[in-house]
Image (spheres, rainbow over the protein chains, first blue to last red):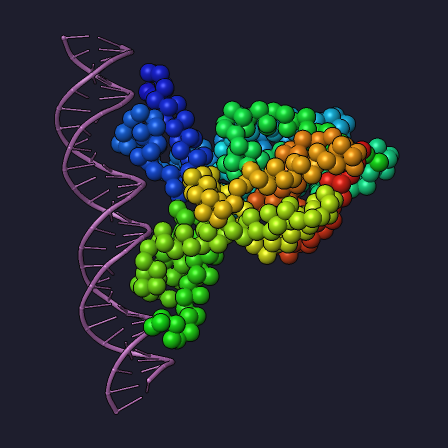
Length: 207
Length: 207
DNA sequence: TTTTAGTTTAACAAAATAGTTAAATAAATT
DNA sequence: AATTTATTTAACTATTTTGTTAAACTAAAA
């Protein structure tokens, strides 16, 4: 009650700054001083709002993990047919990653650092990651039997879809060099990529 | 002269330990104490052999970057036809990454941290990353004109190939959960993946 | 105007980490 | 056996970073 009297724009500014610094540098390389500077305040005020670096990081990390996996469960769980789902996943993933290019490298680096935390997070959210694949597999095998698509291992297909959507954002600095382009040029390539990858996958699945 | 008298097994042990710790934790989270423990020695001896953390890291990082890009240039520069090159790239990449699963997340995390260093490294090695794509593009466009493959943007194709080979190793902890498997099971899936991905790509390129 | 919450300043404490050094010890070389 | 080299121990310094605190100040709310 006491806290919400005035506007909470500073708290927002801090969280935004923490997000920026953590997602760009990762937990270990991120400095509280960086976050304070980014938020336009000082270190003392950081600790006034959030007790510790770990506390702040947990907040940010949970948000980012949710965002990283957002949508995927809904799409796979929906009533769409396989082609529609593939289109939706690619569209959804690349759209999110254009808006948050640092998301995958951040989440995956920290998950590699501490795989345990992932599991706890998934359990807490009541999500069973393996259910995703099971649901997807049923539909794929069904379509194979109906000869809508050629025979393929469903988990390999899912890996292919996610790989092509996500990897370019992880390799962004390398790709910018190879493609001889800048941030805006890279974004253009990624927008084109939605259609290119979708076509590529559907073509690869033809009987 | 003085140094090479005795065997240099300690130096090797240190470099191996440094490689393990740096590639698993990244520069910022790696501790000299961790490296010493891993090498079975103490911190003092680390500094006796290698002056500083930065010095050690530079040695390791340069090796790992070379390994990460190894082969790709030779394969693309070779006289193989496109299908053979695709087969060779997938085979080569996945084989390397099965042996060094931490390689991509390490290199890409550090490159994202400091893209400048990449450029310097490439220049020093006399490698022009964009030449890779140019060479590849010529061959792809040629095959499109000859109707050996369907029309496709060469850079998008190259991204697809690299994505599907590399990404699963970056997302390994997540995939282990989704696939409900352990390290050896994951390796089995990755071995199968060589053929799966190659077929997937060739199928996607059919006219 | 008085009070209260938000913020800054600046100094400090505590912990972690990198790096150094001298002395002792172990082990290999001559 | 004598010498050199490798290694450990342990204490220490320097630096970086996180976290705390008290006091002063600012600006909004009552």
